[in-house]
Structures are given as C-alpha cells and as structure tokens.
Length: 319
Ligand SMILES: NC(=O)c1ccc[n+]([C@@H]2O[C@H](COP(=O)([O-])OP(=O)(O)OC[C@H]3O[C@@H](n4cnc5c(N)ncnc54)[C@H](OP(=O)(O)O)[C@@H]3O)[C@@H](O)[C@H]2O)c1
Image 1 (cartoon, rainbow, N blue to C red):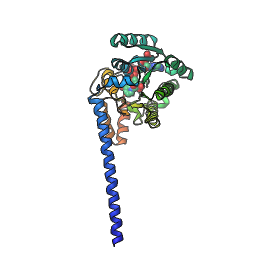
Image 2 (image 1 turned 90 degrees about the horizontal axis):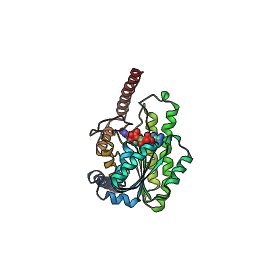
Image 3 (image 1 turned 90 degrees about the vertical axis):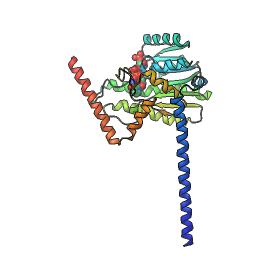
Image 4 (image 1 turned 135 degrees about the vertical axis):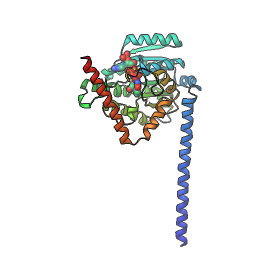
C-alpha cells in the first residue's frame, strides 16, 4: 500500500514537473514571438536602418525591376543601403537604378541575368560582378508562376523548366555564391521570398506550389545549419500582393501594394525566421490554417478551377 502510494506521488510529481516545463516553454516562446511580432509590425522602423547597415553596406535583390522585388530594392535604399539590382531586362534595370539613386542618394549596380537559363556559368558571372562588395542582405525574390491555373499534364515542358530554373535554381545557387562571405564576416541576412502556396500543396498550380515549398523547406533547413552563425535566413510566404504576376491591379487590405507589403516585410528581417510578410497576410494565414485541411484544399482548388475557366474563356474569345 505504501509502495503504491509513493509510486503514485512520484508519477504525479513527474507529470506536474513536465506540465510546468511545457507551460514555461510555450509561455517563453509566446513572449519571444510576441516581441518579434511587435518589433516587426508595430515598431517596424525601430533602429531598422542601423540594424540593416550593421549587416553590410550592400543589398542584392533579384527580380528587382517590378512588383515585390522593386519594392524591396526601394525600401532597402530608403534605409540607406546600396543596391545590386538583378533582372532580365537591361533597360528596365537602368530605369529603376536611376530612380533609386536620385530618390535615396545611394549607389546601385546593375547585373543583367536571365535565371530561366540557369547554369553554373551564369552564377559564376553574377558572383564575379559582386564579389568585392560588402553584401549584408540577399533578397532572393525572383520567381515565375503559371499564366493561369492549369492541369499539370497541360503545362508546356518549357514552362516547367522555367519554373524550376527560376524558382529553384536561382535561390539555391545565389545563396551558395553569397552565403560563404556572410558566414566569414559573421553577419548577414538572406531573405527568400517563397509564397503561401509553399505552406499547403495547391492543385492546378502544382509546380509553382512545389517549387515554393522547396524554397521554404530549404530556408528552414539552412536556419538549422547556420543557427548562431550571425547570418539570419528568412522565409517569406506572402498571399496576394498587387503585381503583374498576381494580376491583382488595385491594392486592398487583403492584397496590399508591393510598397505597403515590403515596408512591413523589411521590418521582419532578423526578427521573424518565417513570416507572411505583412499583418493582413498574417491574419489571413492564421484564419486559413484553422480550416480543416480537406476543406481548405477543396476551397483553393475550386478558386483555381474558376480562374482557369475564366482565363480560357477570355483566350477563346480573343482568338
Ligand atoms: N505578387 C504576389 O501576389 C505574390 C504572392 C506570393 C509570392 N510571390 C512571390 O514574390 C516574388 C515576386 O513576385 P511579383 O509578383 O513581384 O512578380 P512580378 O511583378 O512578375 O516581378 C517579377 C520580377 O522578376 C523578374 N524576372 C522575371 N523572370 C525573370 C528571369 N527569368 N530572370 C531574371 N529576372 C526575372 C522581372 O523582371 P524582368 O522582366 O525585367 O526580368 C521582375 O522584376 C516571386 O517569387 C513570387 O513567386 C508573389
């Protein structure tokens, strides 16, 4: 009887201790996350310029002539960083470069590169042009998607290679080129712009969703490898932002303009390892994550089916 009651007491105390440790852990991570969240979204500019400049004087932004990439380049320049702009079109690059230099009095460097023709030579050529710069921030933003949602078997093989070369190869090989010097200096930030499509498998944009999931998983694995190295690696998983790719034309609370989105996203660099980028996307992401997964996939698939039908009807009409 006494042995039984002492076992019971020991068990009870172990459970209480386990419960207390778990509650403490959840409480502490909640507090840390709450602080990071507040710092990112409520006081985004608190010491931001100093924080970013401490990482290095230059930022590299891919896909920087339009949409989210252009907004990252402008915001980082506004914070006082010099910017390396990388995109396909030399003309567009020059226009963005002149506008940034005159608006923010920073230096820019232009690198013309078409990531759909990925090869080691391409990444070596980019590296040659930037290797002497003190690069503190790398924004792997370049990305392509489908013209409209489509069944996998109907997507052209050219488009599939383009999706893989741009969305998978660029982030991998640019990070491979630029991370070692950041690690050597024990400072830097790599920001990988994935997508909310990385968080859940999405039918009718299957390869886009899978390439973004690669980016998201790659980023989180690197976070483990390089934790404590002084280099932060962030995955950004936005929902809709006004851009050519999203085909959303007018900003709303749910789908902000690239400038509104990026002003908040830049505040999360070094604070949140994974972020949806802006407060309205954090709210939508939270709401969608609460839905049962079968309902969520069904809902998203139906939205894509409607978009696919509308795009095909429009195409047929114009032929
Ligand atoms: N907009 C959204 O709603 C949304 C949502 C989730 C995630 N994202 C992600 O955010 C990123 C930016 O999207 P966005 O909507 O801002 O796109 P966007 O407006 O279409 O801009 C894409 C940028 O990438 C460049 N680019 C395209 N193909 C390229 C290539 N082959 N080689 C080099 N540069 C190339 C374009 O410039 P040039 O044409 O001059 O080369 C442009 O500067 C993407 O990774 C996307 O997946 C966007």
